[in-house]
Length: 557
Ligand SMILES: [Zn+2]
Image (cartoon, rainbow, N blue to C red):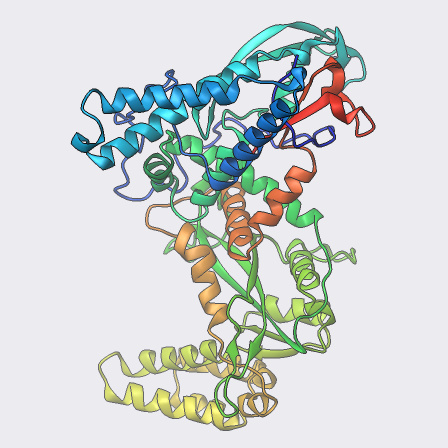
């Protein structure tokens, strides 16, 4: 049975995909205050209709065009086995849809915007209908009477079952062969594995779109944007499940794919910081925190950033190079068992990111952070030759906090004192600042004096500047706001640690410019290939050594 068109690619066994679990939380983790349940009551598309018609993204367009070209070429070549009805069928459907929309009057009488939207809907619904027919006409997935089960025994073909999925073209019903293993009492759908649909009702192309949007805005806003921009109905809860499963896959990929690269500059910078993530009560039960009763409402996200910097003018400040920063973040421990040489989970994350960027091999390594003890313990262990700098931003902030405490917000002396200390801090040794703090008196000043004393070798700002180093990048501070604050700390959001970490992985991947690479790797792994056979019904499971002429691939993004 012939199906779709060329570009040939050898069939590969897919890697098992992340299954989307049920909803263990109840309620959206990032539901914002005043954020109405999107999708409730105003879904313009009936759930079981084929009229939900999302707009395909560019890559799908490319895939479709080349598919059609392949079809046309096959026809010109006069190959009777490769002649298909899809192109004329689509042409016919589109023309019919256009005629229906225009009616008897023609384009002149028509509202252009309404015409565009209506035609998009009609064209995609037509494409969905035809694609569904094409996919379901192929039953090669039931060609073998049995297939190996994970338990090692054979699973027997046990009929075909339908499943509704949502794609970039809208909803469609897929028919798939089911194999049941009496040995262990479980079953599976080979086609779901092949097409990345195990445990998911969203197609790979739509999953990608959902991930792209949910990395930026809340699940509710994602649902609204998908409806407006892509014409596809995915409710907020579905966005959450799909984006989190994708984020978990990206997190696994981040752990497994560490391609070392060469340093991109002689001096490279690495920043470490932490910020509180608002979590559900069960996620911080029994943990000490900053609430009046001593309890916690947050867990700490730790973030590592790597970047390069340069000095645009000889006397000007050292500035971060645009587009050079990459991020990796998670709610993760910096503690490790005393007996083990193993680094903590977060230290391993830092190591991976350093390797990926070539920081570990940079001629001059600079680490910026605030005064937190875990930061400098980690740096001493992982990067013993790095130059350690307390970000001037944090040091200044600390001085202003003391001044505020001592003088109050309205007293002129507050600014006078703080500015004077900041000047001293940048001019040379830290000792005058420590002396001034001791002279000021009060608990806050005493604590600050200890902070400056402990970190004085990390605060030699005049010396660092003479060495051509950036000391107050603002990058470290901005990183937490951009990666965590802007997406995960909006009012009313409460996360599970697993859910928060998944969205953090997704967001770091995107902000570091790695989203495209991730999908390329997924495709290479065979997860996105839809393989049909013309002659050999088992070609779906044939390896690359199988006859390539017998297999046709629909670019399945
Ligand atoms: Zn079994």
